[in-house]
Image (cartoon, rainbow, N blue to C red; front, top):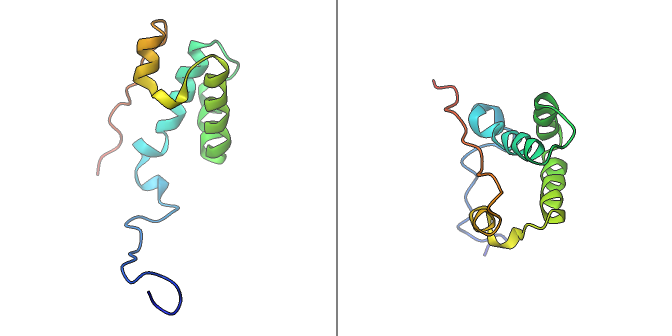
Length: 102
C-alpha cells in the first residue's frame, strides 16, 4: 500500500459515471421492466412516466418496484426465473429490442 492507504493495483473505471446516454439501449432498459410490472398488476401510470422516473430517480424507481414485488409475495432472494417457476401466472421479463447502432 502507498502511504495514502490505497492499494497499488487500483485502476480507473473503464466508463464514466455519467456516460449513461452513450448506450441508450441499456440506459432505458430498466423502464421497460417498470412498464411490464405496471401492466401486469394494473398499476397507475404510463410509459412516459416510467421512463421519467428511471431517468431522474433510478434508485427510487428500483426501490419502489422491488418493494411492490415483495409485497405481492415474490421472494427476491431466489431471482426472477425461480419466481416465474414458483408463480406460474407471473409473466417473463421483457425482451428489449436492439438499440441504436453506430
